[in-house]
Figure 1 (cartoon, rainbow, N blue to C red):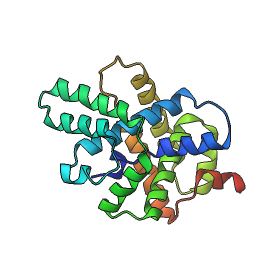
Figure 2: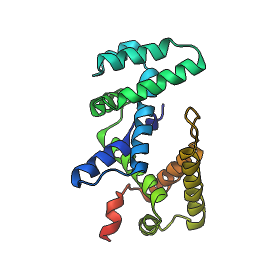
Figure 3: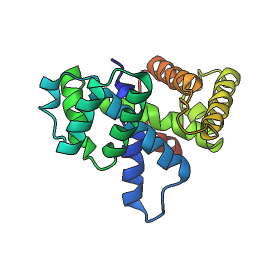
Length: 200
């Protein structure tokens, strides 16, 4: 199971940013938070009950997850998963993530590195100014293919924003950009944070 199924790093990053200043989160930040919580909720629905009982879940959230596991119809399950995602907004997700990471054998260093990959992906999609900083850190990257991937991810995000309620968003290019950043950082042998580029 990929860590992207339950790591809500955009949520964590945006919450941290919100502690540093009093600005309201942008619409794109809020959408990323909601998507991350939805994915975390879906990950929980896939867990057996013996593991669910080990997590710090509110009774209403636990009941909703168990109900989602029992539903067999596609539409019914989709609606219940959305309800689980809604309840996840009230949950304290950090201890849940930590327990999932423990079960998957991930170290805190691995979790932090994964968060940085997601943060780079989101910043490259959000603003062109981060592209130069990224290229300065990873000069071995091919600029043209990377720009094309970023443009495709932006178009995909715009298309998802225009979707009617109930339609499944597409994440093909979103995930492909993440994998390319991961590949480039693996080649460089390090995972610098986005802020590191500003220090050079």
